[in-house]
Each structure stands twice: as C-alpha cells, then as structure tokens.
Image (cartoon, rainbow, N blue to C red):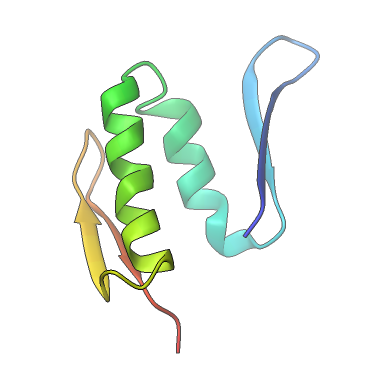
Length: 73
C-alpha cells in the first residue's frame, strides 16, 4: 500500500495512491479528519490492526459514513 500526501501548486493538501482502492482513505485523511489528529490516528490504528493481523475486521466512524478495514483474501 502506498499513499503519498503533499501540497499541490495551489498549496492545497492532496494525495496520490498506487491503487485506486486506497483513494477513499486518502480523501478522508485530507478532507474530513486532517484537522483532528486524534481521529486521524484512530483511523490509521484501525487499518494497522488489520494489516498486522491483530484483527480480521475493524471499523472507524467519523464525520463521514463509517470506514471498514478487512483482510483481502
């Protein structure tokens, strides 16, 4: 998984992803919760739980509809 965050020529936050399936995550991180570091860390923790194999499924609910992280078969 690769997401790169940066500021564009208009100094706006933006991102690039290797796989389109990560675009919703990038969008949520730069738009909805970027000003709330504890929410950002909570969302990334949910993803890490699954990526590290400590959970098969996690959910994060913020200002947008909830996000879910699951292991791909």
